[in-house]
Length: 150
Length: 106
Image 1: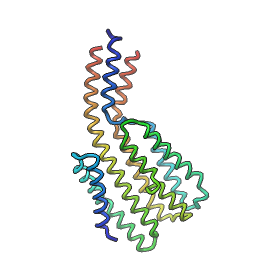
Image 2: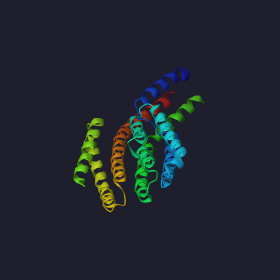
Image 3: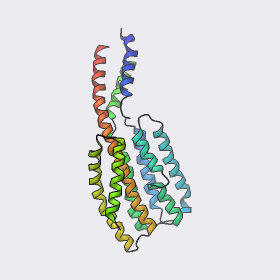
């Protein structure tokens, strides 16, 4: 009796979960924080010649693209994907800052001081949004599946 | 610099975005964003003074203004998403109830 009901239970859970918004993802959360630190650290060095930091710039761009690709791979994740597309947009926030740095060669400490809180706030919005996602359901489902396996 | 014009343009973009995504909750989201926009005014005015005093150049001023607009877009997306998550939480309560019932039955 118990064995026959398990596929039915899994089917009902799958149906219900498929109707929910995306769940909290700890990888996204920690990687977003790491990328924020990486970006702000690079901005601190943008009063030095761009050419001396080209490798770090490429590493940051790769990291941003990697996170966008990761988020695009998840279902029901439209808002987060749109946020990461904005963070990867050539004409917005980080990419346009890097372009300005490349154009000018170096940026002034005063401008960097004004620009950093802008980028920091952008990342904070992404981090806060991930935190708002549902952790409870993710945990409940894991526990439930573990119980079935026993 | 015409701050009123800039603020109006930003408000129009936010309203369009909110309406596109959430017809019913659009007005509530727009209100939240207008409060956020009021907080932005202080920054916009500080940057204008820095530009007038030639402490930042035109390219830097443009970057700062655009970055604030980008932040407003991100904030709008966040608010839209949170509305969606609230709806998801309601659905999840149903999931919890169904799970409890099924566990009892198995």
